Length: 267
Image 1 (spheres, rainbow, N blue to C red):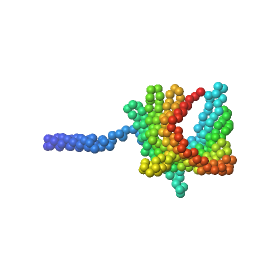
Image 2 (cartoon, rainbow, N blue to C red; image 1 turned 30 degrees about the vertical axis):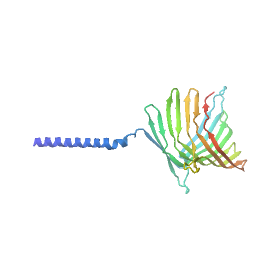
Image 3 (tube, rainbow, N blue to C red; image 1 turned 180 degrees about the vertical axis):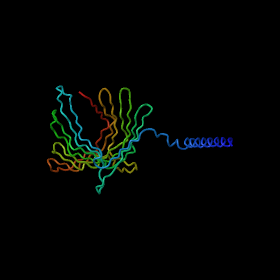
Image 4 (cartoon, rainbow, N blue to C red; image 1 turned 60 degrees about the vertical axis):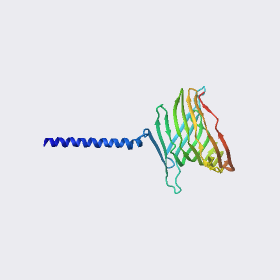
């Protein structure tokens, strides 16, 4: 009887062991392929409503003057969100990102899966201020932009003494925009910024796309360099007002910026 109990126990252990190993074999042969490449982080940002993200104020104080009495630049009332539906209901869009750290230490942020419409960006006021914080020149107010966005792939890497951030594959199509400029002297509405490209059919048909956001930023002891810009397109303003009266429309066509380098540094 004891022998039968021991035999049964041994058989049970063997069966469990076999089942576990069979499960592992099945995982190895069928599921590991699906699991491969799943390392990293998914960072998905969902925005609902026109004020999904708000920033009260961004304040830059210039202290570069020899007397240490620099003025200020203030950007207030920043909002990022999504346009409401035609019936006024709040809509939601999601910005999709996958983050991986490669063997060489570089960071790749893949946002290419993002393809959203109706992203909104607004700024209540942009002004300069005195060293005491008193308002001086108003540069812009009531800035509102609605855009379609295709996400880019961003790579952060080290190249010798330089840290580089390279963005590729993304675009922004501004479908509507408005702003008041220079203390209310100039008003613009019906702003659009886009690019027209050949659809590849061989018929010469052009299709509307966004402005490329491709660029390379280089950070080193000399400051910040911006290069490899691939900006080309058209800017349309349906209505331009000066002193509250419309003076017509404005179009800037065939704008191209593809060989320029910008360097930013202190002085």
